[in-house]
Image 1 (tube, one colour):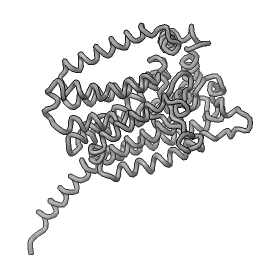
Image 2 (image 1 turned 180 degrees about the vertical axis):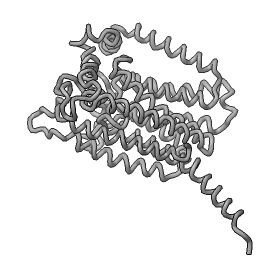
Image 3 (image 1 turned 30 degrees about the horizontal axis):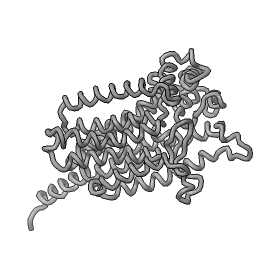
Image 4 (image 1 turned 90 degrees about the vertical axis):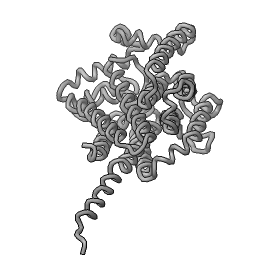
Length: 394
């Protein structure tokens, strides 16, 4: 199956991207921005096509160029991601929406209305940095300072800045990806266990310390709304309550493409973070299960590619990339099905959003390059040697 893993990965990603464009065409016309005077009802669809095209080109470049150059650029990419995250807090450069400072305005850089989300780049930069750190020396993982404390500081800088943007979902995603890379590198269990305990304790302490903050109160209220969405269906539990209604009204067969009701200004952000319930309402249970199945295939094929990487850096990098993609999908599906508190993360390859789509496709490109060097190249070499042995001498 390892030899076919790249084909499975590509087919799964294409299926999700196509589904995303179809559902965006169905839902984006009912977004709040589309109702502005003179607004283009399919403006978001056109933009998504642009980002999809750009993402495919970038994915091809990452698949074609040797992934080992990422190891050499790990430190510059890490520093660049920190600078971009800091720019989110700079007036007239950073953009604050709904109390979260997650975006950089393109106007300050002469890019017009375009906006970028640096946390998407920071996810990949953190994984690349940790993979490069552990790839330099296998003995590092046994040492407390080099194998645990320094990588923890590297990860903590990114997670801290993203958390300061009030992007708790992305911070949790980056922390999970970093933790998995450290686990795959062979860091001792007691170090990782202590880190998890301290992290959870710190999060609880911060929640108590900043409970007077309006933003923190909003995050804590989201947890309460998650525990009983029906009791908060007119407030912070509105999105998850409406998402459950969408799944319920769609049932097994769905209402039909374009026939969904919750997207008609009842469910906020139906074309971004909550596009998965729209799939359930309009296309029914088979398509929601197909989405989950695609992410299962991405997990299996991605781990097979990472496991067959030609070196330690490739194995750790591939594992980290797969973790970022799948954990984000799990968090989004968990939120939209009311299994997890609302965290505001898009569904990879499906939700509307240029930054996330491009970074997800970059991850796919890296995995394809690891596949080329870890599986395709050895198979070609083996076939060449076999032909040489079987060729009779004249």
